Image (cartoon, rainbow, N blue to C red; front, side, top):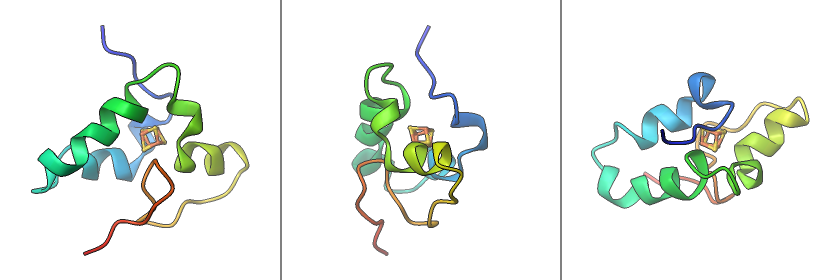
Length: 68
Ligand code: SF4
């Protein structure tokens, strides 16, 4: 079974990454972070959540910002 980040169910970016019309461009981030048991803790959003902070809406797992 595919690994799931512990924050996946409450993560709006995960929903976006898996439903955007840019899914072909963005899905590699899901595989690299959200489904990766070694790397999900390095996700910029996950780290902020662990510090009790709220992530900016457009913050991507790799720390860059989603541009329109
Ligand atoms: S790895 Fe990051 S973007 Fe993916 S579900 Fe977890 S907190 Fe959200």
